Image (cartoon, rainbow, N blue to C red; front, side, top):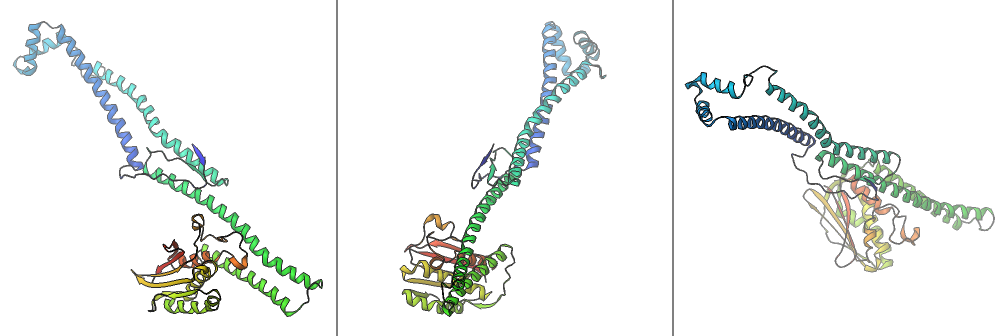
Length: 400
């Protein structure tokens, strides 16, 4: 059964070493062979048992007793032993030729068991065939653009097929999520590009029509809009490079403490306006091999984010240290934080905590996406968590 879902929930399977595809086929074929041989052997034994029981029942008591003794010691009187067999069991009882009844019975049993074994084999492999058909249906749906389609994972399947099904379900769900994010990103991108362009064109058209005087102030307003547009294009270009794995870094000996002091100095005028206090918890130097310019971008983005959204907390704390061959940088604020739903998409492009924010008050929504991309390019990651005292803590980790 195929079902549509936004993000497929993959059932966790317990994998055992002997549940591989080869083991799965081997066990079933071995079971069929052993079962078939066992049934044939049982039928042959049953045939002899019934024959012996019936003939022994027909023998006189004296002959039966004599034959029982001769069966244990046939060499004592071979002539009498064979006479009793020929008399009661028939002259063809010991016939070794292929035309004997024993061989005919064996051929008949094999002729009966072969098609039964064939049918059981087909029924055994049918679940695999059905499941592969389901996977093919999912693949065809994905190629047609129906992302998010998935299929159930039967419990009694080889581990390879279970893992393949899990991977296909996850891939389909990721494609569905990427498609939705791409559509939302395109809509947001069109809005972000249109805003400065519309403002610039409107201002220039106003000057051409004589509505506005072509003064230096008016031209500066147009220049500011074009600079915003240029920054947005640069940010999008950086993210595109990061997505393509082409964000090249110029790594040198980098002093994190010096970077922190430099970025705090950059935002100091805005700190004075908002009354916020940035505290550097670690004054000692932390050296690493990294791109100082890109790391400075990350620190500036985090500080700018705190100034925009956590100014009510009046405090931002930055810490940095080396541990286990990795650099750790934290940036904690005391702001109101964000909702649980928004925490899941904090690093998604063009996302803002409040949809009503304008570009000037809330930014373009690319800052944290850029910071995460730079951390990833350094072989690390940028994560976020809630503080017990309120606000958020951003954690940067990358190899030293």
